[in-house]
Length: 359
Image (tube, one colour):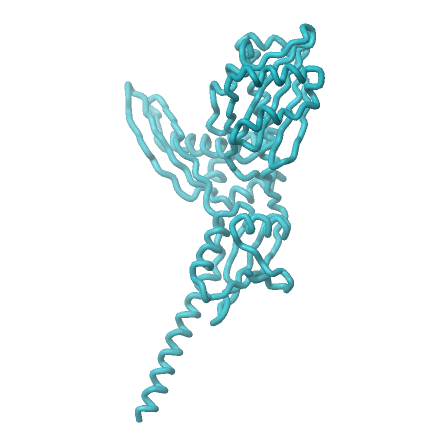
């Protein structure tokens, strides 16, 4: 009799865990998409007139938030493909919005909005226009602008260098690069002047090594008659890229032309940074991975990493048994890129079989 009761209890326990596992399986097979794009502090103001409509003001806020987001994740050339968007299409990409503050002052309505956009829908919208977005990743670069007067055979780094003085004025909230300017060091000036004749080939390591930044942008601004030539030496992740531009507004000592040159150079550097972090959303690589159920912390960290990765289009659980949880991941990139990114997050994989497993 005792034996029969034990068997019955085991059957009930087995059925309970079977139902629980099935519930977990069916619940978890829903596609999980990466996080949304959040745009904050959108300020809109409109006069409170007879035909005032608060909804129209909110719609303008949505548009402003959308184009601010586009400025962050799309380079300057591709932004030209998005001149306008219908408000209904835009609203279809919004997950939520919040009114942080609203007030009336002197018959003017002021509102501050926060808008969350569905990342997958934004990517789909851009893909339809043959635009590949970039990861909105902030980055610090050591920035050293050097003005070289070829007629006088002299160079300016700190004193009388209007680019150095004005570079970090009028900062744009949509810019991803933060520029760290060097301290005014006479030794640096002497070292650079010593290499004047070979300035285009000089590596600047004696100068850049003093700062706790591996990555740098050195801008050599050559003044010669009525032209400016800017040679930019961009060092990132131990690789060097040279960019050469010519400008036709040589008088950089005037505020207007100095600001124009600075803005144009910043666009070039922002576009280069976006190119480095570009996502090819047309690549939809299916990856199959299994993870042991013995360690819930590993499972949780794995899903959190997938959810945080911009290159992950979506992922879901395809199978669940007593030993493993099986995932399918749709990845916007190559297998080697996935392995590299996950390795940076302390995950390594055995890739010998069709279904990869964590080592």
